[in-house]
Image 1 (cartoon, rainbow, N blue to C red):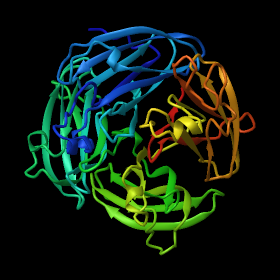
Image 2: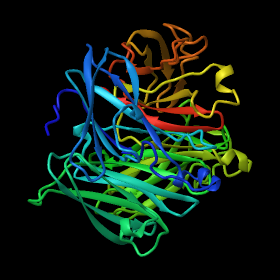
Image 3: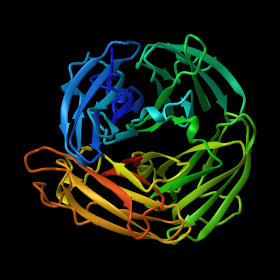
Length: 501
């Protein structure tokens, strides 16, 4: 086959999808994310300057053949979505997708959801451009029947030929506990279910640690891979998705756009993984919303491949972090590192508050002056708080972290499904700090055919809305990172903004 890899080319993994990936056999199973049936909608945005046509290619796990869908016309700035139930795919499909545009750059986010009883979660993970593929991919945290959670991760082969992916597992002590090889056809995927010893090659179906994935072609040259991860509760209808991190993203400084302790009923946790072949000594510095340093945690030394788990509430300088909201910077001496963040019910919150809020976001090694968020929504109070809202009506809260040491301004442009600019929200953010935007604050509600009081939901029943954030002309080179929390009543999940070329 020949996929036209033009200016816009995005790989989507972790489509642990479609009509019945895991089918529960009782009402008890219906309340377990590990055993739920999952579906996926792909949201995608044209971040170029002109209209383009987008074509999608779907690959079932273990197969080099594909199902083609499109082309679909997409105006500049427009963000829209495709529920893959509209594509002629086999029942119980799970696999990967490739999105290709005829001319303009595009970005994409996979939105995974379940219609099973009790589910409100929308699991979010970004696609990758070919430049983000790597011969080495880091899976910052993997669990098997630990903390009531199990991880499933998928590896996508980015090459036009079959490759071998080698996965090495490390426990929390930094010891390598097993290695397994998987042969993956061109553009296809392999899913690894961490509680299935036949998948992992490990001696136990329980595990807490991390993984490193490397790719090789048949001639032993490097093969490019990407990966997606699902962390699924085994005892409740809660889960979250995140991306495997390419080796090129490893660095000695990692920025975390969100840090929380007993604020909004949430705590934040960081999984920091050593991506290097030498020890890494790490320190976490926390900053409040005015950019003031608040606490320092560390130093901690972690070995190659090892992860260190850190809770924002527990810095070892003994700072009282109760009520904290801000951001963090993770510094390493020695080995380069990667990191992921989690926001979930505070350990001191009532048990009910811990069950449905579970969000995962990526630490970033650098910022950009222009970034995109292809999936942005805002439901009005009536629809958002309705008893019938089991996750179909959402609100996106966006946190923007200024990576400059001085105050900087950023334009947040809200676009409708047709690519028309709806509103601009200007943020002024102190150095090393963060600020928030959403469609309500941006005065972007109820416009261009949208439902009164809503963004991204239209009176004709359609939907689509997106945001592009840029450094303000007053400081055009200012760098930032951003994450969006897509919130539902009692549930929410995060995804990172995508740099725009």
